[in-house]
Each structure stands twice: as structure tokens, then as C-alpha cells.
Length: 194
Image 1 (tube, rainbow, N blue to C red):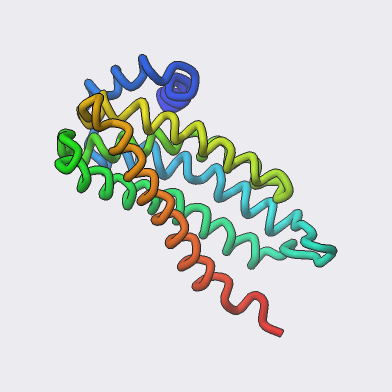
Image 2: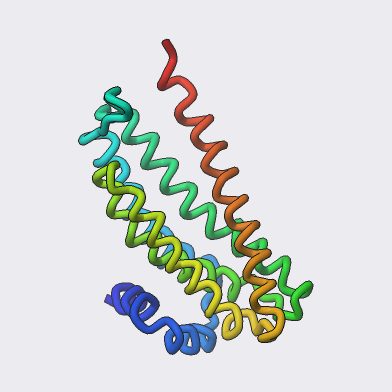
């Protein structure tokens, strides 16, 4: 039940929750196994059901609806979510000194993990592929969480917080795109051969 309360607090009252989280000293490995891996299952399972069991139509062409396609989509979702947290935390931590922030990988990892919460929860919409765009909208709220969490978590100076956020955001988008492309190329390369 602790994870449910943490998710609720991060989503509903993030400003006060960031202050609480900043006082915690959770090692990144514990945060990964106790929070990220559990929540990353939501979009993965939803993608498996949506793409593997339900499927969808793109310009009148039936896509998905097979177990193998659903499994590959689930793996892509799981790895991009879980791996994206690690890589993004690494980037935010690496940029910390450049923006006068405190360099601390455990704090950076918690910052990113909690900022991904809306995408984890919004991943339930992958269950209906036509509604998967809503998960992307949830990611916008995750960006807001990241922005307001930079100061309490990384001790970013107020005058550099926006620049730190923008640079981190650009790198986060790059990480997300590269991870998705690599995984899609690996897992889906044989799916559409004619």
C-alpha cells in the first residue's frame, strides 16, 4: 500500500511530496526494484493486451492481434520505461555540476522515477491502441513533475532551474527516441517482411 500512497501523493500534491522525497535517502537499486519495475509493468501489460490480443487498424490495415506482436510491444514498453529512467537519471546527474546543482545519482534517480509516474499510470491506455496518445499526454504532467522536483531533489539554483530543465528535457527526449528506435528495430525487424 505504500507504493499506492506514494503514487497518489506524487500525482495529487507534488510540491509537498517533493519536499518529503528530498529528505529520503533511497538507493537507486531499491528505488528501481521497489517502484520503477512494478510501475513499468502497467504499460507493458497494457501494451501486450492492446497489441497482442485486441490489435488495431492503421489506414484499414489490421496491425497486431497476435501474441508475438503483443509480446514484442510489451518488451519495448517495459525496457524503454525502465531503461529510460536509468539513462535519464544518469544524464541529469551528469549535468548537475554544469548548472550548480548537487551531484547525487540516487537523488537524480528518484527524481526521474517519480517524474515518470504519470507515464507509468497513463500506460494503462495502451490497452486500447487507439487511446495510447493519452499516455503521451500523461507524460506532459511528468515533465511538470520533473521541473518542480529539480530544486528540492538536485538543489538546483532557482536562476538555473529552467535551463537545467530544458537541457535535461532535450536529452530525455533524445534518450526516449533512441531507445524506442533501437528496441523497435531489434524486436520488430522480422514482423513485417513480405
